[in-house]
Amino acid sequence: MTFAEAARRAAHVAAAALGWRPEEFWAATPAELVTALGLDEQPADAPVDGGGLAALMEQYPDGR
Image (tube, rainbow, N blue to C red):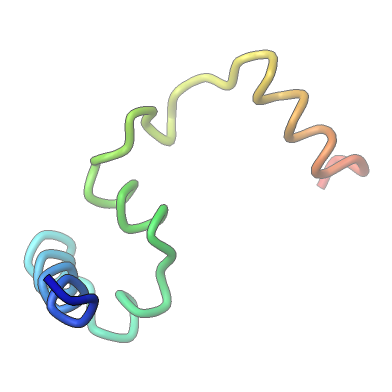
């Protein structure tokens, strides 16, 4: 399958399952699409473990 074919299928799934318009699909990252479709291994509302918290604190040292 080519990239274009895979993208077309993914856009169709996003439109059908999520109600996304083409511009919303193309603006989303692959990770956002996976999360929106519920395909991620760890749900967005899952608690952050110590390592995840440390990574966030390092990425955003000023608390923002």
